[in-house]
Image (cartoon, rainbow, N blue to C red; front, side):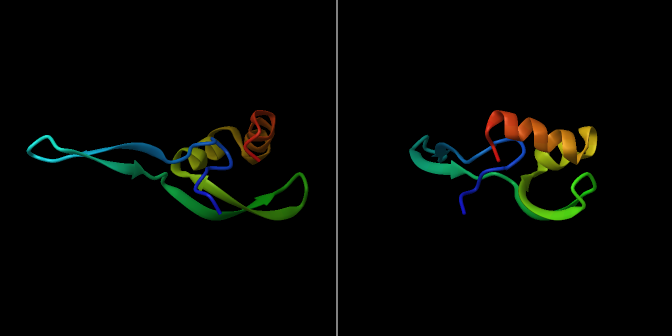
Length: 77
């Protein structure tokens, strides 16, 4: 499974390691992902999502149902 947050759509970014001598080598900045189970009250089911730390904060702020609706509209689910 790819490292993409199913709520916010965040995914790995590319960049460079920069040494003391300013030499640049390619690297990737991975997402802070967690595999979490959530109880979806409206559907009366447990769902399992790959969620980033920002996605967890979004779910805490606006609720699971609204977060899933927004993610579905944006095409992350």
